[in-house]
Amino acid sequence: MGRLLALTFTYLAYMLAIAIASERQQHRVQHGPCSYTFILPEVEHCHPLKDFQVTNILQRDSPPEAEPDTSQTKESKAQKERPSWQERKLQSLESAMENNTQWLQKLENFINENVRSGVEEIKRTAVHTQTAAMLEMGTNLLSQSAEQTRKLTDVETQVLNQTSRLEIQLLEYSLFTNRLEKHILLQTQEISRLSDKNSFLEQRLLTLEGRYGRELKGLQSEKQQLQELLERQSQLVSQLQHELGSSSLNSTLLQRQQAMLTDTVQQLLAVANHCNEISNMPKEEPLSFRDCAEILRSGVKESGIYSIRLHNSTQTVKVFCDMKTRGGGWTVIQHRRNGSVDFHRGWRDYKTGFGESSGEHWLGNDIIHELTSSQDYSLHVQLRDREGNEAYSHYDHFYIDGEDKNYSLHAEGFSGTAGRTSSLSHAGSQFSTKDRDNDRCTCKCAQLASGGWWFDACGPSNLNGIYYPASSSVVRYNSIKWYYWKGPNVIATMTTMMVRPANF
Ligand SMILES: *[C@@H]1O[C@H](CO)[C@@H](O)[C@H](O)[C@H]1NC(C)=O
Ligand SMILES: *[C@@H]1O[C@H](CO)[C@@H](O)[C@H](O)[C@H]1NC(C)=O
Ligand SMILES: *[C@@H]1O[C@H](CO)[C@@H](O)[C@H](O)[C@H]1NC(C)=O
Ligand SMILES: *[C@@H]1O[C@H](CO)[C@@H](O)[C@H](O)[C@H]1NC(C)=O
Ligand SMILES: *[C@@H]1O[C@H](CO)[C@@H](O)[C@H](O)[C@H]1NC(C)=O
Ligand SMILES: *[C@@H]1O[C@H](CO)[C@@H](O)[C@H](O)[C@H]1NC(C)=O
Image (cartoon, protein in one colour):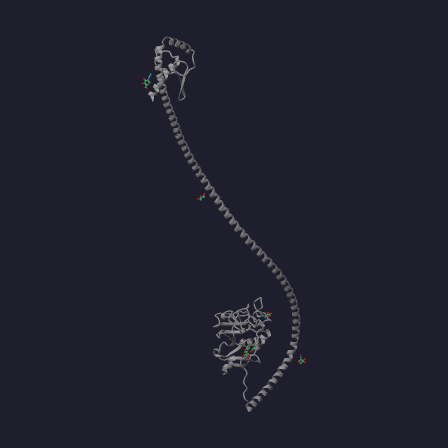
């Protein structure tokens, strides 16, 4: 390449020398940023050069000078001097010229080629480097964008996290609020209920106050009446004292009369005894049995109806005596069997008794009281259900008070098979009927449960309830009841209450 270039320059210098000395026929060669112009010799006006030599002078294009005028004149002079040499010279120059031209063309081609390939290479390398740079930049950008994306994602997740946390908090708050609301609602309801109750209580208090006020007034008036009564009584007492004083004088007289009468009576009795002994009349049956136990002891072993005379009384009473059960001697005070007798009766009926001793009956509260208060009695309650099962409840000690205490019940020492717990009410329960309510219920047990009984509130038993003969699973509140035997469902078809001295 270097040699080629040197050669080229040599040639160019030579051509330039020629061109300077010849007419202006210019060839231009572009090499990179520089352009070179060659002035080639023209054949017609060519002068033979005396001392032609190739100088190694490279000359830049320069504006035309005035010199060529002189050289032209010189050339024309030489032409005139050597015409034959000129012709030869011309030929050789022409071939050289030809060669040069060809060579030049080749050179040009070569240069062109080289330049083009160089340029292309430069372009290619430039493109490569640019592409590489671009790629690098691209990768940089990509990595940067990836980084950014990652950061963005982080931020996003954080934001999401925060949002979700906030949402959860919000949810919790709303839940809490709901709960509070509910609580408040409940409280409000409670408050309203309480205020309702309060107003109700106030009303009740007012009515009670009114009632008590009225009662107080009534009591005051009663007190006044009592005071008046007291005054009258005291007057009466003083009057009576007066009378007593006068009558005490008379009493001695009366005593004397009485003594005389007693003497007379004793004499009469002696006479009568004498008469009895003489006539030897048959002894009368002494109707002085106090109860069935005494009748049994007297030798009677048959169950049936017998007369007894109550203690302190001349009244005789027909009673049914059970001489079989647990040794016999039982005086029956109540009996149910087939529902033929109505037991839903008033106070008077229960006081005096009703029904026939041979069938269903109630002996009478007065009689039961007389009987059971004269000595210590035990009570035996005999029951039978629909299937014929029998059971009993036994009380070692039993009595009832008089009417002044509303025939209050006293039963102790419970035992038996009709329930492990006593079905009779507490000791002291008063007797109630449909027309006399002495129970401890605000209701009227005798009307609810029917019959007459020692209802408590209204208690677990009532053997004087309604007799339901038909079998039924319906729980009837007013039926015959002995709760702790078999509960509310089982209705007894037979009941007997009977008493016997406790020491029998
Ligand atoms: C022209 O070139 C040829 C070969 O390339 C050479 O033989 C010949 O002598 C040259 N002519 C001149 C006048 O230089
Ligand atoms: C949300 O943030 C909390 C605390 O800032 C952190 O404990 C928890 O792991 C995060 N959860 C998620 C899904 O990023
Ligand atoms: C004694 O009794 C009689 C008749 O009962 C009566 O008339 C008389 O006044 C009485 N005597 C006195 C002192 O009270
Ligand atoms: C029964 O007789 C006794 C005395 O034996 C007597 O104390 C009692 O008051 C009498 N009771 C009645 C109800 O008459
Ligand atoms: C109930 O029993 C009594 C006594 O045995 C009897 O006289 C009466 O006819 C019976 N009544 C009914 C409805 O069975
Ligand atoms: C008995 O009952 C009547 C009303 O039924 C009642 O006025 C009276 O106070 C009662 N007697 C007793 C001692 O409770």
